[in-house]
Image (tube, rainbow over all chains, first blue to last red; front, top):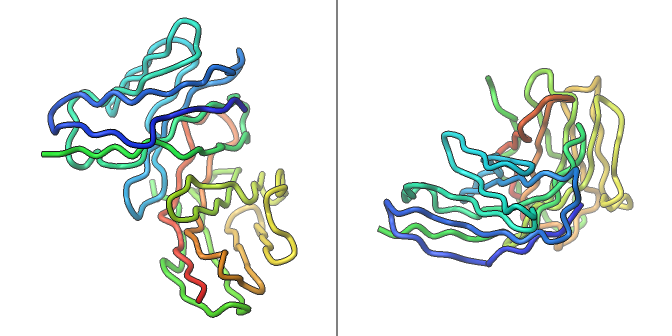
Length: 111
Length: 114
């Protein structure tokens, strides 16, 4: 699976949009971009995933560049409860393929 | 639906002792994973089961770690003997065999080896 690069930490003001970047320049054609987050003392939680089109669900939006070498996770109105470590993961979408986590981005939402 | 259940929530043992962790995945999920998460790092996969068979255990330190998944449902992960560097959170996750949006993780077992 392709490697990802994320900033180690970011701050965001409560109520503002949080934009978390991820670089995955070696992504291959059959690999999806997945985002998970991990709130303190909990297991990682699935947020969203996409292949090449932008995706939106009740939690977040995922913007993937046209060349698929980078993506941005957007939390449109960050709350204090969004403070967590956010992981960007690239993997092929075959059933049973494992997730390989990197270091993630520690997002701190401040009042 | 019920989530992935793990127990115990916390465990403190002395080095060279043995310890076991238990995981009950979401009903019907064929794939089960054990991850180790050392403080400040992302989770690292230890072993993956598909039903009751091992798919990948290349990252499992087999001289001291063992895992089984009886009848393709519950799973146990054992460490014998434990070392100080085994202090970590042990996470269990499950996913359906097909058509899934993502894994579901349990809350983990925090192991401290003293």
